[in-house]
Length: 377
Image (cartoon, rainbow, N blue to C red; front, side, top):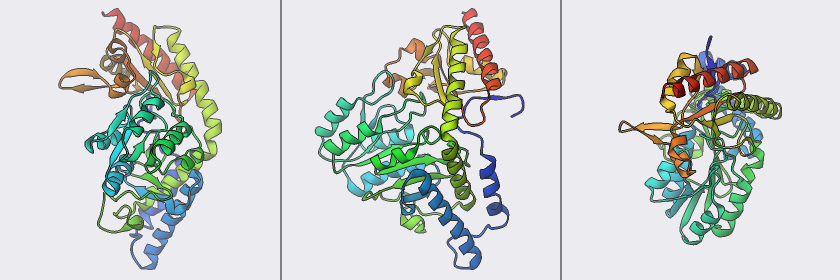
């Protein structure tokens, strides 16, 4: 990381030292398979059980409602695909979901509901969709958008779903939410919730799926009967232990971090916008503190990212290359963002290791790169 300005925390944030310390003994010493019957295995199994209890406390749920998976994508897939497999019917989501939700919904013949210009789901349209279909089995709406940072009013969504489709299970992809929102306020509103450890300082390769109440999505990984037969496969003991520690630390520090990172995000956006013409896709009032999504008219984000990389700035774009042609991301397209802006989209995401010095240096690099590209037109 020496010499790099890391502003891609929404993609993956550095592991917390406490999480690394917690997992190390289970990589080197207590390496037994927790499904075994001997005392060594029982020690590993006890560590998983204690981690499950710790995660449950951080989320305000029961330990038995916590299912450990291999990643957030798996958790999302099980919530959607598993619900349709178990119940049949139709899956409903929003048009700006992560592909881990959107793809399985559409693959099952489901419906994607429109959003407004800030990425918030259209509740009237959601109401119409639910009223027009009496076989909705699952509704999946993300708590925080992974690309632009929009925060969903999950209480409002839950109210609509419970009223219009009382038999449907409600799932939320909360992968981008744990650092910024107390999920104890979200879990009572939903039947299922997904997390990914490496988004809040845990390791890659561990996800969480909360399954509450009467929800019972069919497993998509079968074979060993682990996780009460809800997700087979040998438990990643070290990763699970580290996940619990990272989530607990994130939970304990959240209020302070939200205030600190909010100030840094404001500093970043104001520093850039005071020097070059820029469109802030989602205002800070509607976004989490950790995401600044900016669009620069007249430039291509691929070129911008190249220049930023040469300056040591790690960031991401909101466009994908398909068949050799740059196309706006599905999120920006659903939000109705003009192509001339969407083509110059840039996501700068902040996290628990971000400093004011990084922000100032990154802002300077963005400004100089944008000016260089615009000057070359």
